[in-house]
Length: 231
Ligand SMILES: [Zn+2]
View 1: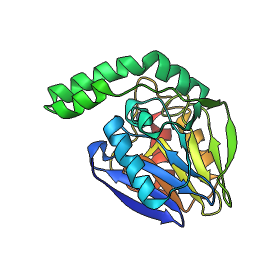
View 2 (view 1 turned 120 degrees about the vertical axis):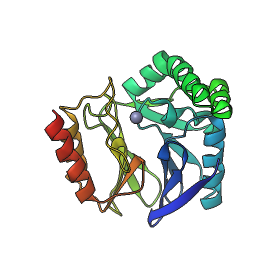
View 3 (view 1 turned 90 degrees about the vertical axis):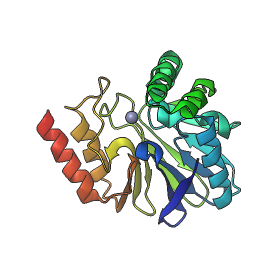
View 4 (view 1 turned 180 degrees about the vertical axis):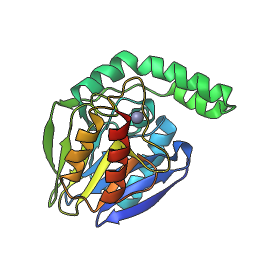
């Protein structure tokens, strides 16, 4: 599965994929790196892992932004590793992961994407090893990042990653470029603008969405206001 790196700041990268217009992330410190989301299946995860190794040999920690299949079914390719998520993300991966696998494998099959269906059908389900409830600091050596849960929004357990030394935020699916934000049955539209305000309060220069190209704060503000009108 081929992807393309976009360096959004010094040592901070977005990896773009055609499938689902998805964007995974990488933050490189002096002693560790942080991988943000692992992709749709183990083949995708392995391609991301190899791409990370092209950038840095440092040991990685993984953060899963939320429990939608395309963000966590590639995790096995990164093991052994510390895998961090919100506590409800971990519970949902364990409770709902197999159902998501069935639903999306069937969808891929009915869309004529047999190979993708098979990859998802055979991917190992990996639960996060460490959980957070509100926020946590991670020292990557020479650079500290913050993982933040800003309340219910796209799901009730979204986590975004703030890289303060370069004013970059990895937003997961709190922000989407190229399509409107994905509002599902597990979304909380009325609370979503407040979560985006938490991101905007950080005055980011670049915000990396879970799907689409990196955007600026003004784009996030527009998406925030669109969501506020939908309440
Ligand atoms: Zn999602």
